[in-house]
Amino acid sequence: AQSVTQLDSQVPVFEEAPVELRCNYSSSVSVYLFWYVQYPNQGLQLLLKYLSGSTLVKGINGFEAEFNKSQTSFHLRKPSVHISDTAEYFCAVSEGLIPGGTSYGKLTFGQGTILTVHP
Amino acid sequence: DTGVSQDPRHKITKRGQNVTFRCDPISEHNRLYWYRQTLGQGPEFLTYFQNEAQLEKSRLLSDRFSAERPKGSFSTLEIQRTEQGDSAMYLCATRRGGSSQETQYFGPGTRLLVL
Image (cartoon, rainbow over all chains, first blue to last red; front, side, top):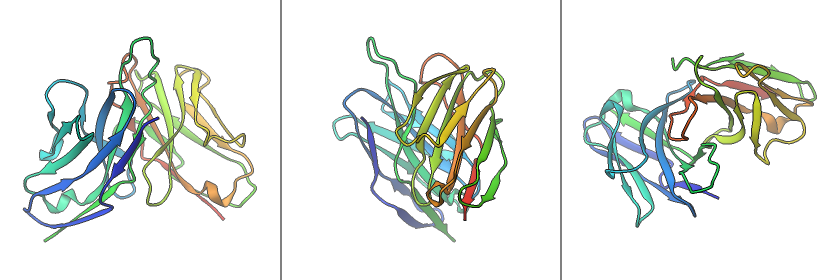
């Protein structure tokens, strides 16, 4: 079974400041890692994903995340935030490919982090 | 707009009534998921379809819940004898076939309020 912990439920920040949203996961198998953003009254939109290879992943809207296997973390960062980045952000994992296994790709989400950017 | 549509967007019902939600996937996506999101929480997996076959169901999916995907295109999620605890946002997500690496695209959700 997998689990995801987002360490901050709310992160307030001023416009043009850097931000880091923290995510830790637990899994007994290899995983794929995702960050989604949800704007009010909308569905989720993929920001970026880590499948394999380089541990630094770049996504849309200037966001990036770094996979750290030893610390089982996948923190999301942006060097300079904008008012329009105000939203809720979700970290998620799915089971990676395992020999002889069946992975249907269901996502396990964290509780979410509300990012509020102040002018 | 991701291309995944859900109907209705909002539903208010009285306890004990039945409700049905619909999800229309992106046309070439043959994998479809239902998730439930309660206030202040992340989405939780409910069920998974590969074409018309329902291959996985969560323990969250009690016997009052049923999902179908009759022709491998649109899907419906029905809740019978609704309870106040069923109040939530119900999200549909779809992806292309092949590896689970493929991105899931989410619809806007159906927000259910049970009075």
